[in-house]
Length: 174
Image (tube, rainbow, N blue to C red):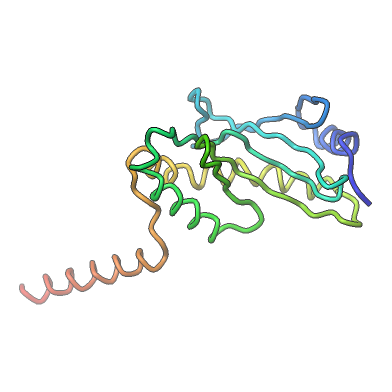
């Protein structure tokens, strides 16, 4: 089985989600706690549409962030490293970056193949993106604004171990 825009709209109606429908996709937005869009609003804008003749559902938060091409040399490595670390730690959803224009999006693809899309699957996908945007906002802003990448788990452990060793040295000197 595959899905259609009509079926997706029906599920959104059932879940009481407000949306707008264009010819090939559905647009909606969700309030966020930390994430701010490019206008400073706490809102994540999303598009939903079927792909592959309806066998895949795509939910995408387009234009989530932007790395201006003029800042590529200074900040690209930090942004890509942060995106890679977030993707490594995240299930289902992932960040994508278009290096031509610097647009960064969050996407989730649900392979439906021969299954019917359910309201629960759809709601998990659309609610996952604002949650991920909130959880990653500080790290993304630090990479985009200051060129500081998100630390890996190993780096955090090493920093903590170094702190504890230095602290213990200081306790022994008393």
